Image 1 (cartoon, one colour):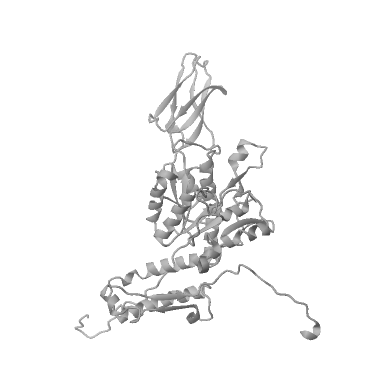
Image 2: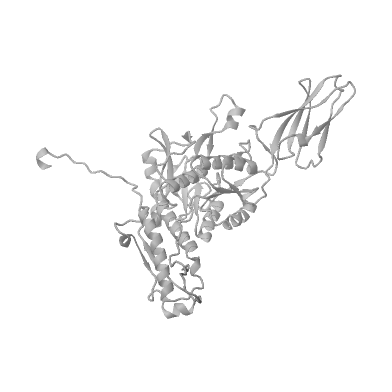
Length: 470
């Protein structure tokens, strides 16, 4: 207590008993993608033209000053031209550490002939294997991982991240690996250290071992949800829901910590169009990146309690396999979330976790993710309670703070009930904290919430009535 020695007015700051719990972000994604060890060809990269010298009739050696070229890698190819005619080529790799490389022309260019070099840069990722890079827009992604390329696996990662931002995503961490067999565990460990990540995916990978590791990562961290890709197409749709020993590309094992989407979507790929001007430029890509963007869009606009379904996939121009209602009737109960062409749009037409009905009360994505949101928010918002005296005063503070947070969640529409008392309860008292638990240094709070369920089946019952029976 302060000591007052003279008359006057004294104002003291009193710590509030309310420790506000803030809702955590649920829209930050973590992507893992395979990049080759060799430099990538980026056909969209502009060819850089420089004059490297003038012939005198005898000179045959001309310097290529790589420092003049605004690229972030030494890899690339030079096409040397004499007065516009192709004369030689030179290729530089990342092992070329010299500031200047040279090209020798034979015979010697004529006097006053202009020697030019058309430089086509290749891309080598500056990101180390297993090192997460934060990307808040596609331009940042290109800086670390490159633009649209000719490499099949790299295409999947690029289109996934492009689709993520195009569909409403704003923050993602991307990790490059060379091989899933040797590098995936390290990449997942690196993502585990980033607390804000709430969604994880490895776009384009349908390997059962990889999917198990993604789900295991979500289970270990306790605050994440995996978005898994199905196969591009399936000639035998019932086989999608059967679990077999070698199940690559088919149904993952039932889990409430992941969602599975089928089929792939078709998007415009500028490289495909550039390579074949007569083609439509469409490329089948895995939908997980686009879905992560939709999750973020729905979370920000409506809240995590709104199912990420009945949403248009921005950038999708078609699906790799059209599905009918009859097709989906056999897939939806098992948790195969179908992407369908409906009302002239490509829509997400499913909102279930993998396994569907087998997951009972957690069969809906929105319910599972809302629980993850509540768990992580309360966890982060009650850290102040650690090492506080374990007394009824602490129990009251915890109850008051958690109740205030859940009241706001209820007001947002995430909890079912006309009053907060109907929507949730918080119990932290002598009953949940008997002497034997207090002796162990534990304080236990029991929380019950009534999370809203999505209206998956909208049913109208219509009957004909006469005017007299109204």
